Length: 460
Image (cartoon, rainbow, N blue to C red):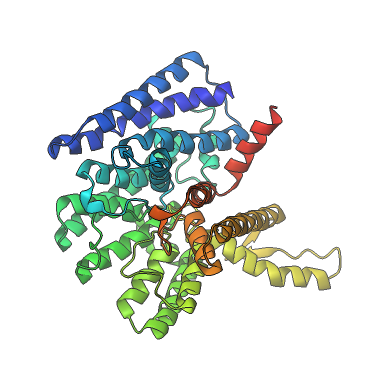
């Protein structure tokens, strides 16, 4: 545990740096600096204390996963401090602030803020920045900064859910990922500014779109936006939902290789089928396409209220949120590759059952054999993910919501989507805590949290 705390110390020091941006925004708009200076000093102070008092050693994968889980929790606690003035006087001040922060860092986009027009610009900027940081992952930023961190870079990289490398080393791989992420962010800001949004809205909307986060700074920002703005946002959502390996091919002008990717093709087919199905049910082409992309990419932007939609539309959106987008992307859900493997496993299993016991029957995807360990792990993740959904749904049902509302909302939270069908701001503490846990489980893909819990109980 001491080793984990040593690495947490460096992460907290780096985290303090990212509070400079909203502080600068507060200066520009003549707003209070206190709400950002306090968490900045706290993060830096705690980081220095941990960094100086604990010696770093090589992290194994278990420790890397535990560090990832602890980082999200710590950052959400410290990152919730700027929200305190918003909920001042509320009995749920700490819970609401933590909910908002966790929703940001997990790139979910669910919110307990009822009216963004009354919120200071600097806090709105911070909400969007937390999603931008959560999208790429603070640990990926950490790895891209520290070139001397060699002994534990692989464990930390794998703990973020990445298995392939863009470059020979983890350091250069994460630097490449940051370059891609930063480039898309700049392009998104420029395009949204040209499409008609003001600079502040262009920056914050890009942060929320490319991270597939979902926070907005103005409640009517999409309903009043032109088609050009909505088109750019759709492109940014899709961009954030695609594997960095595929983006690397695009940057290297290997477009055909990128388009041949099985996850890209699977996403395209599902988006087309779902958009057509929702259009048939609603007769609204723009809403059908936008909401399909928003749900599948786990962004959570919306052009219309979800609750009044028909049950078949809500069911389609729920399935899209459950499946999610590409593995190794900023999006949530069980991920396309796991979905594809699970589908292919059915005929493969049947074929194995009717074949001689010693027959070698490989499961292949695009000509690449999938080892049985990966197949078992995929099944385990999907099963555990589904169990967490069921438990969360049952809790919300007991809290007084209908089965449809409960399942949709929990799927949205765990898929880190952010589409909303209930009034979370007025929800009880049990509902908010349940959704917080589902957001965390979904963003970390279950196992880091389970390992953290296991480590806590094993030390007793």
